[in-house]
Image (cartoon, rainbow, N blue to C red; front, side, top):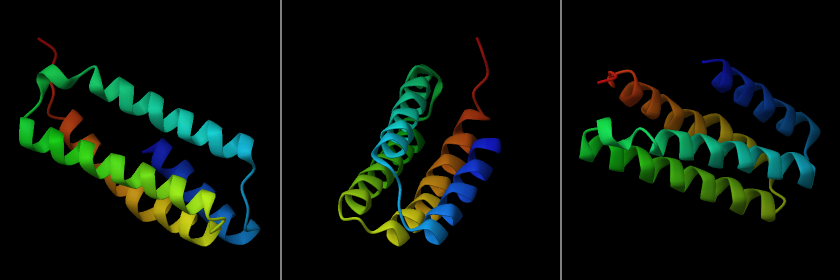
Length: 102
């Protein structure tokens, strides 16, 4: 929930500022990549259909982040972060809450 709150704050800042430095963009993508990798490590404890759906949603969201950034469309980038990325994170959270250690 803290990560989602931070993303929502960043998307609002993007709307107001209208830019994002290459450093901060690369840091954001690196964090998304790390998160995706951490989630992948838990794959053995999942329902296949739910997991695949979450993977696809998160992958599409990250691609949209990259496309918006490369186009210099920071309003779109803010929207993608606020709506697509946070929705993908909510889906992951729901899946991960059902996983119990063996």
